[in-house]
Image 1 (cartoon, one colour):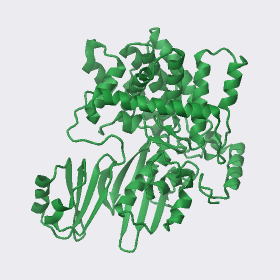
Image 2: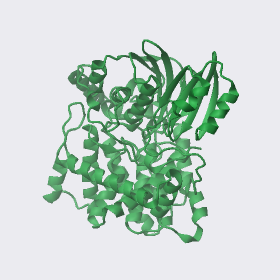
Image 3: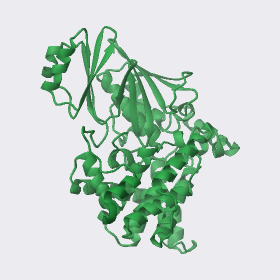
Length: 525
């Protein structure tokens, strides 16, 4: 079972682009591919399995933009990302994208063939949701690489295994794996830093490649987590009834090695970034290749003029959610919390409610940490990837996380926060993913608003003592079981629901005409 981090897997990455599963994960895969070639790339072939989600979504949902940016060595929030296709061409890197019939079991599988004048490598990786990814193999050798370590790959021609064993006495590695390859060995060293050349001298390597860490929180060996699910949390905390945010800090300090103050400070920084993005969205965003224009500013005007129905703080929540979604669609900086497609429901609800309650940014951060812990439970048992589970894996996760956060803002108890999370997810089982015109904008906007409104209702129900009946862990398991019976067409492939209505297809054709058939946001058409 993976060691989930709140900042790696749940509240993050900080990024640009329409989809974390597509853009941020693809960028991280591209970064590792670049390192595998030591930054020297002449040709790249990207292949997607015909039965996966990527043949119909890679262009419009940001996989191309992410891969290109990663191959160039950029970060996920780099302002140049919308022009990454042109930049790749300017760098003289030839690129082909093809659809193949290979029967990949995961719908978000990337097959990369990388070449320069001296060497060629094949890399297979998957996007696992929320910007997380895993390299499955390099040159046909199963490696298992999630970007949490600095990884040193050492190719050896006939080196004795005892010499490899001595490497561990000269270098402090978390793990050293030895793989048999044709003509020798491939040694994979996972550590907090790269193996220096002098530690490798005895091995006389034929080739060394160093693939840098791409996650904000590094992986560590011998991590002892206090709990991995809500039932384990209740058993661990017992009658102490520690607030959920405090338990989140305890969890993340164990996972990351950061101290309490650093965990809270990191979340405060995220809150401040989100508040800036909300303000940017309300003031107005512009981007050619999107379905919806700027609408949140009009909502603010109507709200301030008293033309809206009295929704209380819910109206401010709607304003903030729509503003964040517009920033995402304009390639502005957002936080995948837990994903880019569901980036607005949680922070929009928390920040709007906290401001209405005159609470501090640290209070907001504590609420976001409580939400992050619920997200840990969610992704430990299942996934945030809509391609695997439909929008119940994204919007549903956001709703249950936001419900726990709002209870935390109200100084509710640990048990009330977990109850609110359970109730919020219960009402979103079976939610499909069907982006109109193949963009992550609509009905994603409405689903983010629904997630936030659902969270507010369930938070108040929990604070009033409503019984969720089904524990949170069991609800997550139920959502997973539903996804296993959900048709592929309803799991984010743009082949079902609203995505295939005549109007949706017409909008997609219009946007393709504006781009001239080029890649999303690149202007290369």
